[in-house]
Amino acid sequence: MSDITIIGTGSMARGIASRAVAAGRTVQLLAHEDKAKAEALAAELGGTVTAGVLGDDITGALVVPAVYFDASKAIASQYGDALAGKVYVDITNPVDFSTFDGLAVAAGTSAAEEIQKLTPARVVKAFNTTFGGTLVSGAVSGQELDVLIAGDDEAAVRSVADFVSAASLNAVVVGPLRRAQQLEQTGFLNILLSANDSLPEYQWNSALKFLPAV
Image 1 (cartoon, rainbow, N blue to C red):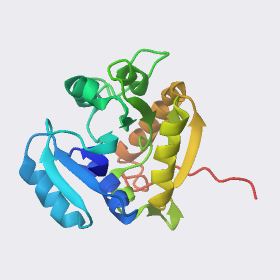
Image 2: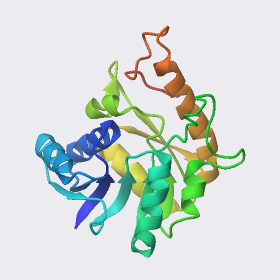
Image 3: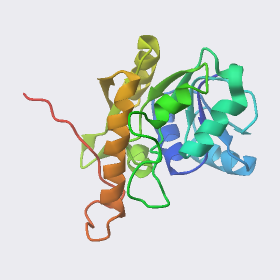
């Protein structure tokens, strides 16, 4: 068994897995297609990380598909009832890549809410407003990253917040799962800033930060 199952081997998978290793958590890393990629990333990360491929039994209590929205929906459907009792951490920003001018979900819903319809797992939204590269170190300009968290199940939200805190990140619980609608719009704005070549200071290495009053 492992603490966290991460599906994918890209930037976000690397970043979240890096924080998991830093937190002393055991990780199951499943490549989307090529197991060799998971094995290479596991060797690079160190810690207690096992490698496999999508379709293997999921051993983590927290399941983090570090993939795009459509792939995440497919994963939820593929595993079906095997996800019952687990916490499914949706990190996606459902960008409409045909226009790059909005989200590919209807108004009044979110990727997280749509995924919850597909799985018996307890879906929690988190990490969609952070970039993979910044998660490797967990900070930008000396400021620990804020991880904004939304979910309907109190115990599931707490488990994600506990992981975030153990990973030396700042957990900010923003409310129920419907707040994912606002988080995904915020994540999209962050992406737009970083994709804008006329804003060189925001090139996938920046972070959103909420500063409390002293």
